[in-house]
Length: 206
Image (cartoon, rainbow, N blue to C red):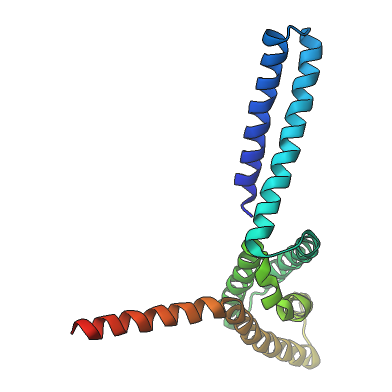
């Protein structure tokens, strides 16, 4: 759901309702200004709440979700957003030249999965492994790597641990790529179908 447009719609309807109720109360009914203002505020609040209820219902219907499901998904997305911020902070702090490109690409994919599921919450169910497993592992390992990398002196054991952590993050990055593919699988299948149709059309014309 586009939060800005949703908020703009609700506030616009609320503002129009507030002005309308106040105008009718003052000029048509002849109520005192204070009482009219109270009516207007009440009308604005009622309009805001009603619009919010309607827009949310339309959004849920369009995506085939119940309110309970949407609330559950929103809670998970809020938690995921906090984890992604931690992941971004730790990956950016890693100065290993060999890891920079991988970390940037990893963050891009993670943000893409989050962005898609936030816009289309139904797809959350296609990325459950990402949200319940892969993201947690990435955060834990990247923070561990960032902490060890920041130490001024590194023993052989620490160096080995850093190497193993980088390799595990690299493996997880591949898993996250697959998570993104799972989220986009239907779109890819649809695109391939459209391409096949287009090719058949071109072949017929030839």
